[in-house]
Image 1 (cartoon, one colour):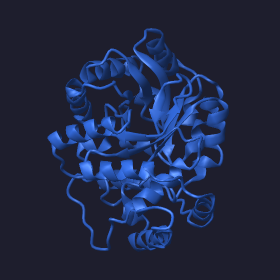
Image 2 (cartoon, rainbow, N blue to C red):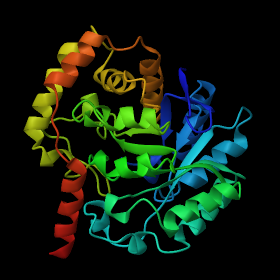
Image 3 (cartoon, rainbow, N blue to C red):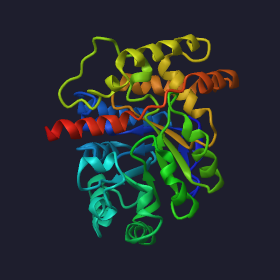
Length: 334
C-alpha cells in the first residue's frame, strides 16, 4: 500500500484511509463482527490510516474493540470533535463558533475520544466543522494547541462541511493547523486547483473525503433505487436531479476498463492522482467494498490523459451537502 508522510509529523500514512462514517449505520445495517474483521483486513493490507468522529455513533467503540484484538502495529488514528447546536450550522456560517464549540467543549470531546477509543494519544484531532468567519485565532484554537502541548494529540486540523473548501485558506496560511479534510471527487475537483497546492506549500495534510460521492460514483444507483429509513443518502442524489446524476455517471463508463477496473476504481484513482492529496477517505466497513478499494489503490496510477479528460469534461459542481442539510431543515420546520 502506497504511503505519504503526514506532513507535520513525518509518520507514513496510507493513501487510502478507512473512514468510519458507515459504522454509524447511515448507509444501512451492517454486521459488527464483519466490520471488525474488515478493519483487521485493511490494517493487514497496509491501510494504516483511520478516520473516525464523535459524531459517528458507536464507531469509536467498534474501533476500540478492533484495536484490542489487533496484534499488529497501531494504525494512525484521526478523529473529530462533534459540534453542538442546530443542523443549520452545517450549511451556513451564520452560526457563531461559541454556539458550535463552546469553551471547554473541544477538550471534553478529545478526552471522551481518548477514553472510548482506549488509546493514550490521538494522532490527529479535528474540528468536525469550520467556517472562515470564525477567524484564525481564539479560545478554540488555543484549546487544540493545549491538547497538543499536553501530549493528548499529536496534530490538529479541521474538517470542512461541504464543497466550499476556500473557507479554510486563511486558517491554513497561519501555519497553526496540520490538516484539512474536504470533499473532493470527479464531479467536484476544485480543491485541487487552489487548496491542494497551498496545503503542500504550508506542509498541511490534505484529506479527501466523499471521493466516491457517497457511493454514487460506483454506479450502484438506479432510477428505482430506494433508501431505508435513516439512510444518509435519502434525497442526496435526487437534488441533482437523479436522472441527470445517472446520465453523468454513465458517461464515466467510457473510461472503464481502459483506465480503471471499475467506476469505483476510477473515482479513487482520480483523487489519488494528485501527489498533494495525502490520503483519500472512504467508508469500508463492508468487507467486499474494502477489498475493492484496496485493489483499486494498488492499480497503476491514472494516466495523465485520462485525468485531464475527467478534469476538463466531467465537472459537475453542485453542493449536494448544502442541499441535503437545507432540505432536512425545511422539512423539519413544517
